[in-house]
Length: 257
Image (tube, rainbow, N blue to C red):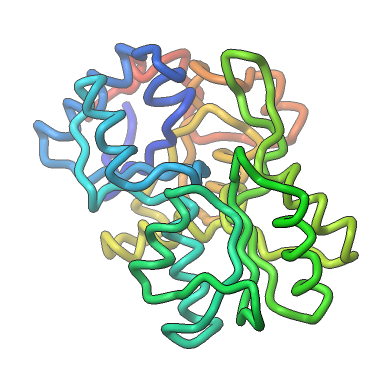
Protein backbone atom coordinates (compact mmCIF):
# COMPACT_ATOMS: atom_id res chain seq x y z
CA UNK A 1 0.00 0.00 0.00
CA UNK A 2 1.08 3.58 -0.67
CA UNK A 3 0.98 6.29 1.96
CA UNK A 4 -1.79 8.87 1.70
CA UNK A 5 -0.13 12.25 1.32
CA UNK A 6 -1.27 15.75 2.11
CA UNK A 7 -0.08 16.95 -1.30
CA UNK A 8 0.69 15.18 -4.58
CA UNK A 9 3.14 17.16 -6.73
CA UNK A 10 2.69 16.11 -10.35
CA UNK A 11 5.15 16.61 -13.19
CA UNK A 12 3.58 17.25 -16.57
CA UNK A 13 5.15 16.00 -19.83
CA UNK A 14 6.04 12.33 -19.54
CA UNK A 15 3.97 11.94 -16.38
CA UNK A 16 0.54 13.44 -17.09
CA UNK A 17 0.81 13.21 -20.87
CA UNK A 18 3.38 12.80 -23.64
CA UNK A 19 3.15 15.91 -25.80
CA UNK A 20 -0.27 15.58 -27.38
CA UNK A 21 -0.68 11.93 -26.31
CA UNK A 22 -2.92 10.93 -23.40
CA UNK A 23 -1.55 8.78 -20.60
CA UNK A 24 -4.73 7.05 -19.52
CA UNK A 25 -3.36 5.89 -16.17
CA UNK A 26 -2.47 9.49 -15.30
CA UNK A 27 -5.96 10.68 -16.21
CA UNK A 28 -7.51 8.07 -13.93
CA UNK A 29 -5.06 8.91 -11.13
CA UNK A 30 -5.80 12.63 -11.08
CA UNK A 31 -9.52 12.09 -11.46
CA UNK A 32 -9.41 9.94 -8.32
CA UNK A 33 -7.47 12.63 -6.42
CA UNK A 34 -10.09 15.14 -7.52
CA UNK A 35 -13.04 12.92 -6.52
CA UNK A 36 -11.53 12.18 -3.11
CA UNK A 37 -10.71 15.88 -2.57
CA UNK A 38 -7.04 15.09 -2.05
CA UNK A 39 -4.74 18.06 -2.66
CA UNK A 40 -2.56 17.99 -5.76
CA UNK A 41 -0.55 20.49 -7.77
CA UNK A 42 1.31 20.52 -11.07
CA UNK A 43 5.00 21.46 -11.08
CA UNK A 44 6.77 22.05 -14.38
CA UNK A 45 10.04 23.37 -15.77
CA UNK A 46 8.23 24.76 -18.80
CA UNK A 47 8.56 28.55 -18.65
CA UNK A 48 6.91 29.24 -22.00
CA UNK A 49 3.33 28.43 -20.94
CA UNK A 50 1.08 30.58 -18.78
CA UNK A 51 -0.97 28.98 -16.04
CA UNK A 52 -4.00 29.29 -18.31
CA UNK A 53 -2.15 27.45 -21.10
CA UNK A 54 -1.25 24.60 -18.74
CA UNK A 55 -4.80 24.31 -17.39
CA UNK A 56 -6.28 24.24 -20.90
CA UNK A 57 -3.81 21.56 -22.00
CA UNK A 58 -4.54 19.38 -18.96
CA UNK A 59 -8.27 19.78 -19.33
CA UNK A 60 -8.03 18.73 -22.98
CA UNK A 61 -7.00 15.31 -21.61
CA UNK A 62 -9.88 15.31 -19.08
CA UNK A 63 -7.43 15.96 -16.24
CA UNK A 64 -9.08 18.17 -13.60
CA UNK A 65 -6.94 21.29 -13.14
CA UNK A 66 -7.33 24.86 -11.97
CA UNK A 67 -5.23 28.01 -12.26
CA UNK A 68 -4.18 27.87 -8.58
CA UNK A 69 -2.86 24.32 -8.92
CA UNK A 70 -0.20 25.19 -11.51
CA UNK A 71 3.36 26.07 -10.49
CA UNK A 72 5.69 26.82 -13.39
CA UNK A 73 9.34 27.85 -13.23
CA UNK A 74 8.23 31.33 -14.34
CA UNK A 75 5.92 31.64 -11.32
CA UNK A 76 8.72 30.46 -9.03
CA UNK A 77 11.19 32.82 -10.70
CA UNK A 78 8.93 35.79 -9.95
CA UNK A 79 8.64 34.66 -6.33
CA UNK A 80 12.44 34.53 -5.99
CA UNK A 81 12.85 37.84 -7.81
CA UNK A 82 10.47 39.59 -5.40
CA UNK A 83 12.87 38.73 -2.58
CA UNK A 84 15.88 40.15 -4.43
CA UNK A 85 14.74 43.42 -6.01
CA UNK A 86 12.07 46.05 -5.25
CA UNK A 87 8.57 45.85 -6.68
CA UNK A 88 8.32 47.86 -9.89
CA UNK A 89 12.03 47.50 -10.67
CA UNK A 90 13.31 47.31 -14.23
CA UNK A 91 14.23 43.81 -15.41
CA UNK A 92 15.83 42.63 -18.63
CA UNK A 93 14.33 39.30 -19.59
CA UNK A 94 14.40 36.83 -22.43
CA UNK A 95 11.34 34.61 -22.57
CA UNK A 96 7.96 33.85 -24.04
CA UNK A 97 4.48 34.71 -22.78
CA UNK A 98 4.72 32.22 -19.91
CA UNK A 99 7.51 34.33 -18.39
CA UNK A 100 6.47 37.78 -19.58
CA UNK A 101 2.94 37.63 -18.14
CA UNK A 102 3.83 36.78 -14.50
CA UNK A 103 6.72 39.28 -14.50
CA UNK A 104 4.43 42.06 -15.66
CA UNK A 105 1.63 40.99 -13.30
CA UNK A 106 4.14 41.26 -10.45
CA UNK A 107 4.84 44.84 -11.44
CA UNK A 108 8.26 44.40 -13.05
CA UNK A 109 9.02 46.50 -16.13
CA UNK A 110 11.03 45.30 -19.09
CA UNK A 111 14.07 47.46 -19.78
CA UNK A 112 17.32 47.18 -21.70
CA UNK A 113 18.79 50.09 -19.67
CA UNK A 114 20.06 49.67 -16.12
CA UNK A 115 17.99 46.61 -15.18
CA UNK A 116 17.98 45.41 -11.59
CA UNK A 117 18.12 41.78 -12.78
CA UNK A 118 18.60 39.65 -15.88
CA UNK A 119 16.15 36.76 -16.25
CA UNK A 120 16.40 34.06 -18.90
CA UNK A 121 13.61 31.70 -19.93
CA UNK A 122 13.21 29.78 -23.15
CA UNK A 123 12.48 31.99 -26.15
CA UNK A 124 12.32 30.06 -29.41
CA UNK A 125 12.75 33.31 -31.36
CA UNK A 126 15.72 34.52 -29.35
CA UNK A 127 18.26 36.65 -31.25
CA UNK A 128 21.98 37.16 -30.90
CA UNK A 129 21.38 40.76 -29.86
CA UNK A 130 19.13 39.64 -27.00
CA UNK A 131 21.81 37.28 -25.73
CA UNK A 132 24.47 39.97 -26.14
CA UNK A 133 22.40 42.44 -24.10
CA UNK A 134 21.92 39.87 -21.36
CA UNK A 135 25.65 39.17 -21.34
CA UNK A 136 26.47 42.88 -21.09
CA UNK A 137 24.38 43.42 -17.99
CA UNK A 138 25.52 40.21 -16.34
CA UNK A 139 29.10 41.43 -16.80
CA UNK A 140 28.10 44.62 -14.99
CA UNK A 141 27.23 42.55 -11.94
CA UNK A 142 23.44 42.50 -12.36
CA UNK A 143 21.83 39.44 -10.67
CA UNK A 144 21.47 36.63 -13.21
CA UNK A 145 18.52 34.22 -12.94
CA UNK A 146 17.48 31.41 -15.28
CA UNK A 147 14.13 29.64 -15.12
CA UNK A 148 15.61 26.18 -15.71
CA UNK A 149 18.76 24.36 -16.77
CA UNK A 150 17.20 21.90 -19.25
CA UNK A 151 19.55 21.85 -22.23
CA UNK A 152 17.24 19.75 -24.40
CA UNK A 153 13.67 20.35 -25.47
CA UNK A 154 11.88 17.21 -26.75
CA UNK A 155 9.86 17.91 -29.91
CA UNK A 156 8.41 16.01 -32.84
CA UNK A 157 11.66 16.94 -34.63
CA UNK A 158 13.78 15.32 -31.95
CA UNK A 159 15.69 17.22 -29.27
CA UNK A 160 15.95 20.97 -29.77
CA UNK A 161 17.95 23.49 -27.67
CA UNK A 162 16.31 24.12 -24.31
CA UNK A 163 16.63 27.12 -22.02
CA UNK A 164 19.73 25.65 -20.44
CA UNK A 165 21.46 25.76 -23.82
CA UNK A 166 20.61 29.44 -24.33
CA UNK A 167 21.61 30.26 -20.77
CA UNK A 168 24.94 28.51 -21.34
CA UNK A 169 25.73 31.01 -24.11
CA UNK A 170 25.53 33.87 -21.60
CA UNK A 171 27.39 31.83 -18.96
CA UNK A 172 30.29 31.16 -21.31
CA UNK A 173 30.41 34.75 -22.52
CA UNK A 174 30.51 36.18 -19.00
CA UNK A 175 32.05 33.45 -16.82
CA UNK A 176 29.05 34.00 -14.52
CA UNK A 177 26.70 31.28 -13.36
CA UNK A 178 22.99 32.05 -12.96
CA UNK A 179 20.68 31.11 -10.14
CA UNK A 180 18.62 28.28 -11.63
CA UNK A 181 15.01 28.02 -10.44
CA UNK A 182 13.51 24.88 -12.00
CA UNK A 183 13.93 21.25 -11.08
CA UNK A 184 16.33 19.73 -9.99
CA UNK A 185 16.44 22.80 -7.74
CA UNK A 186 13.76 22.91 -5.06
CA UNK A 187 12.28 26.39 -5.63
CA UNK A 188 9.13 25.25 -7.48
CA UNK A 189 8.46 22.51 -4.93
CA UNK A 190 8.91 24.91 -2.02
CA UNK A 191 6.49 27.34 -3.62
CA UNK A 192 3.81 24.66 -3.91
CA UNK A 193 4.40 23.39 -0.35
CA UNK A 194 4.02 26.92 0.99
CA UNK A 195 0.88 27.58 -1.04
CA UNK A 196 -0.76 24.42 0.36
CA UNK A 197 0.75 24.77 3.85
CA UNK A 198 2.11 21.22 3.68
CA UNK A 199 5.32 19.96 5.27
CA UNK A 200 7.95 18.10 3.24
CA UNK A 201 7.22 14.78 4.95
CA UNK A 202 3.57 15.00 3.90
CA UNK A 203 4.21 15.46 0.16
CA UNK A 204 5.23 13.25 -2.72
CA UNK A 205 6.66 14.30 -6.09
CA UNK A 206 5.59 12.12 -9.01
CA UNK A 207 7.69 12.37 -12.17
CA UNK A 208 9.38 10.57 -15.02
CA UNK A 209 12.80 12.24 -15.17
CA UNK A 210 15.60 11.18 -12.84
CA UNK A 211 17.70 14.27 -13.60
CA UNK A 212 14.98 16.78 -12.75
CA UNK A 213 12.03 15.27 -10.86
CA UNK A 214 13.73 12.67 -8.69
CA UNK A 215 16.72 14.83 -7.87
CA UNK A 216 14.46 17.79 -7.05
CA UNK A 217 12.37 15.63 -4.75
CA UNK A 218 15.48 14.41 -2.97
CA UNK A 219 16.81 17.94 -2.53
CA UNK A 220 13.44 19.17 -1.26
CA UNK A 221 13.10 16.32 1.23
CA UNK A 222 9.84 14.95 -0.17
CA UNK A 223 9.05 11.36 -1.11
CA UNK A 224 9.33 10.54 -4.80
CA UNK A 225 7.40 8.29 -7.15
CA UNK A 226 9.29 7.40 -10.33
CA UNK A 227 6.81 6.58 -13.09
CA UNK A 228 8.19 4.85 -16.18
CA UNK A 229 5.97 6.58 -18.75
CA UNK A 230 8.46 9.22 -19.88
CA UNK A 231 12.12 9.81 -20.61
CA UNK A 232 14.02 7.91 -17.88
CA UNK A 233 14.49 4.21 -17.19
CA UNK A 234 15.14 2.15 -14.06
CA UNK A 235 18.77 1.95 -15.13
CA UNK A 236 18.98 5.74 -15.22
CA UNK A 237 17.91 5.93 -11.58
CA UNK A 238 20.47 3.31 -10.58
CA UNK A 239 23.25 5.10 -12.46
CA UNK A 240 22.40 8.38 -10.74
CA UNK A 241 22.42 6.67 -7.34
CA UNK A 242 18.82 7.68 -6.64
CA UNK A 243 16.39 5.57 -4.61
CA UNK A 244 12.82 6.77 -5.26
CA UNK A 245 10.20 5.89 -2.66
CA UNK A 246 8.10 4.20 -5.35
CA UNK A 247 8.88 2.89 -8.84
CA UNK A 248 5.81 2.41 -11.04
CA UNK A 249 5.37 1.21 -14.59
CA UNK A 250 2.29 3.45 -14.66
CA UNK A 251 0.13 5.33 -12.18
CA UNK A 252 -2.37 2.47 -12.33
CA UNK A 253 0.07 0.67 -10.02
CA UNK A 254 -0.44 3.19 -7.21
CA UNK A 255 -1.99 1.30 -4.32
CA UNK A 256 -4.40 3.41 -2.32
CA UNK A 257 -4.97 2.77 1.39
